[in-house]
Each structure stands twice: as structure tokens, then as C-alpha cells.
Image 1: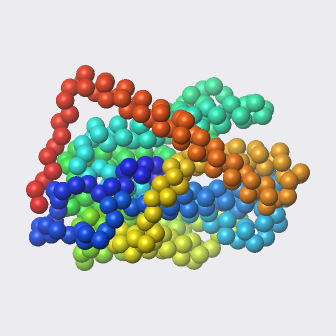
Image 2: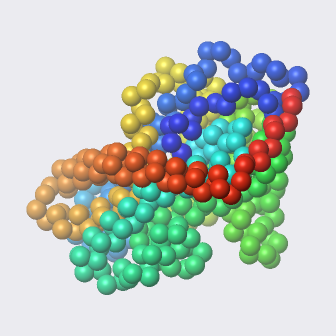
Image 3: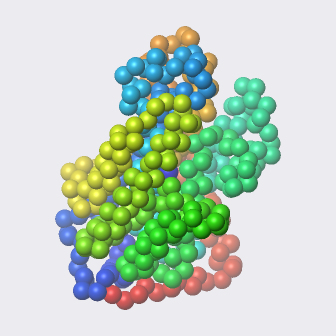
Length: 389
């Protein structure tokens, strides 16, 4: 999932790195802040929540509801079973927002911003989920497992997730590593275009290279979505061009191909039948909506009240799955299903707001100050100047 804050959604000042001959490209009518992305992030998060609570039968016919979710929610289940695609929407938005927020920054700025943004809420949610599950009798929630999860590197270390939803954070981190490598050289239009082209080609060649490390770094299954988001940001900042349209089309074509694997994985994991055609329609809609936002077609929906919606997204994603299942298992026999589902989502949203307000913001601020102090002692930042247009 994307984990960038609303403060990351401001286009960088200046035109350093613009393509030749494109000195004034962004129309004045475009918003200075894409609040609509906050709304899209919450939509993606809620889709994932509905998938895990109403479209998911991983734990057999009985499930956490005491029956199949298809029987418990006959109508809602038809839509909720595609909620896993909310993660792909997160990846698209992440490509857009990370490229936007990195323009004019160096690697050190980027690293600090990611640590401050990712870890405070994550640490709290890992510990809260682990304590709750341990108190409920989950003996597999060992101290070593929890402590290793706190590093956010538990997946490559083959340590089970405290909450299964954490898997997408490893995909995000690999994207950050690749993009951080590009930041060493500084961001320009041509360099970012080259980065997208090389990553796209690498994602195709890595699986046949016989080199597992290339597959890990290029992550073919999710690369098209991150790349698509980056390309759409270039359209937002510099305007459209034939080459950008061709590369975005290539990203979509690779995405539809990867959906074949993703759909099979979703069916095997959740034990529900998934249509590749329906999944492709949704992914195409994701591309279309993000593109419409970038090109100013959704300016009418660019409202500041969407900022709190975006702030809830990350804590909601981190908290919802394991704790949600636990609550359903305990309460489904006494509360009507729809009422329980609505009430549970309301409680999760309230808890997400509390995490953002009382953990993420204050701890993030202290962590930023602490890191800044340490980095000042390490020496001045060597900011590579942006290339001239």
C-alpha cells in the first residue's frame, strides 16, 4: 500500500528537470494539492477491509463468520471478493506520490521521510495486534516473531507476519530502494523516464534470468502498477507526450498479464472464484481515475475535507485484518452480520484516527527531530543539484 502523507501531495516548486522545450507545462488551473488522492487511498483501504471481512473464506467453509461469506453476505460478497485489488490501487498511487514527494530531495531526505512516515504507526499496530492475539490464546505470537516484525524485514527473513496484511509493505520497500537509487543521480524528466523503461524491461527479463535476486528487486507482479503511477505523475508535472502514452500503455499491458498470476493467487489464498475479466476492468478503472486526477478532470472533487480520510488509511490497513477476524469470531453469534460488519468498520476507523492523532503524528515528529539531530552530527547533506532543463 501507499503510505505517503497528504503533505507529500504538493507538486515541487520550479521546473528543474523539465524536458527540453517544455518550460511552462502545468496549466494554472490544476490544483496545488491533490486531495482527491486521499479519497482514493481510503477507497482502496476500505476495499481491502471488505475483502478480508466479507469476501474471504481462507479458513474453510465455516470461516470466521461460522459460515461461508458467500452465504452470510450473498450480494455484498460478489463485490467484496475483488477487494484485494485495492492493494494494486495503492501501488499505483504510491508510484505517483513517491515521485512527486521526491522531486527536489536527496536520498537522505527521502530516507528520513519514509522512516518517519512508515514506522511509528507500524510499531504501535504490530505491538497492539500481537498483545491482543497473545491474550486471546495465540501461542504462535512469540516474542522473536513480534520483534522481527518490528524491523519490517520479516518477510525476506521468512518470519510469519503478525498481521497478514503486512505483506504489501515489503513490496513498497523494494520500490523505495529502487527509487532511492535513482535519487542518487537526481530526478529529471529523462532520468525518470529511463528508470521506468529499465524497470519495465527488467521486470520482464528477471523471471527468465535464473537470478532470484533480480526477481526480488524488480518484483514483476507489482512493477507495472508502481511504474504506471510514476508515469502518470510525469503527465501531471510535465504534460502528456506520445512517449509517455506509449509507456503508460505498456505498463497497462504488463499489468493485465500479471493479473493472470494475481487472480490465480487470490483464488488459491481466499478460496473464492475470481474473474480475470472483472479484475482487469477494475484495474483499468484505477488507471483511468488516477489519470483523470492528474490531468485535472477531477478538480471538482478536490476538497480539503478528504485530508482526514487519507490520514486514516495507513493505520486502518495495519489494524483491520487479524483484529477484525478476532472480533467477528467472538461476536458473529450474537450480532446480525450486516450490523456487525458496519459496527466493526466504524470501530476500526475510530481506532485508526486515534492511532494517527495520538501515535503517528507526535511520535513521527519526535522521530524526525531525533534523526535530524543525528544526521547533523554526521555532516552536511550533499544535495545533488537538479539538472537544468
